[in-house]
Image 1 (cartoon, one colour):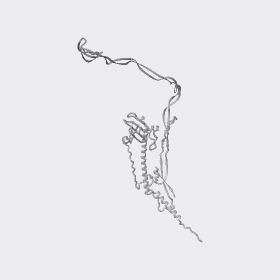
Image 2 (tube, rainbow, N blue to C red; image 1 turned 120 degrees about the horizontal axis):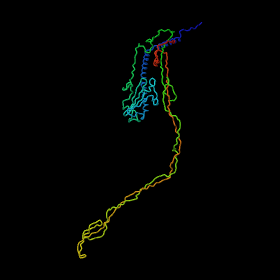
Image 3 (cartoon, rainbow, N blue to C red; image 1 turned 180 degrees about the vertical axis):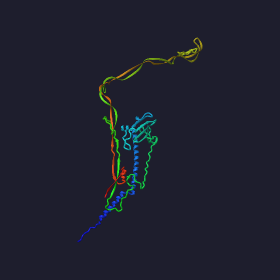
Image 4 (spheres, one colour; image 1 turned 90 degrees about the vertical axis):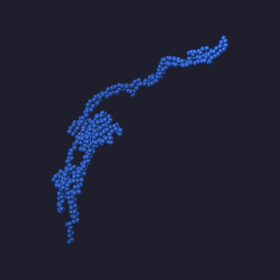
Length: 453
């Protein structure tokens, strides 16, 4: 009789044993990091330190941006009418007042806390030919200020503007401790610390040996259980608190408490109590009539009495004849003579002879000029009228003027304090879990062993 017998050493058993050995080697590599893994961990720590440096630069940049925001808000608010007028005078506005006027948005410092509303301010001082703006910001223990020079320069597009950087030395943020020294940001130098091979890790638990023991047996029995060690990590998150924005002003009374901060404001309030009736002319409804209206006039001036003046301007001659004279005649006002020559006569008349002179005789006739001047003037005025419609009055209207009573009324505004409680997060993981360490988790010193096979 034929009987089939089974071979005790099968191919499946060989494959299972090979997989078991491979899994065991992988667990050893995972539990005991190699030299290259340690280098990667050190590089991760150095990268974390570099991130802290970047955060420091980020915090400085946030602080500077908050100062610049205050400066820009003040420049837009302080127009010419709001600036100081006399040399040496100053105007000042705190950060709290800027927030109340809604010219700047709320901001916080690097810790998420609100900056000082009273010790943070903007102050503008009038100089001889320009203005100096001081922007001071205090957030916790950090306090700096910025000086800005403004004036009416040729390159201003508006009435007043900020002085060009080429005209002055760079205005920089000054330290509140030493206001005369220029603040220069120092570059942060991160030094890499190279640990010795046998130096223990800082975050390693106190009861942990310097080097992880290697429990890998050379010839491990195939059926012996496999364990892994987990380490406890802890991250503590501190609680925080902050205030909400101020509420709108209201007449509803609010009681302050530990978590509620209240501010008060008294305002003058008008209340209508009566009306006062007044009668007056309604200028939009005139009353008109036709009347004779003077539209023009003429004035005529004439002379009613004259003064007459005659003046002799010369003479004319009238011929009277030719006459004989033994003696030359003399010219008078009435007559003038013109000699013609001598005349000799013989035996004329009584047989006498002699010589006489012949003259033409002329009569002088005066030529006169008459001038007239007015001795008396008379003025006569003539007016012209026409029928026109003119306003003789207005219809009456009755108006009512409100009468108010003024009294004081209190307004309230409040903000609430919000508190976030702290927390503790516990995680278990492998030794030197860089993911948890970079997130802020630390070793507690506790560990546990779990069987994985």
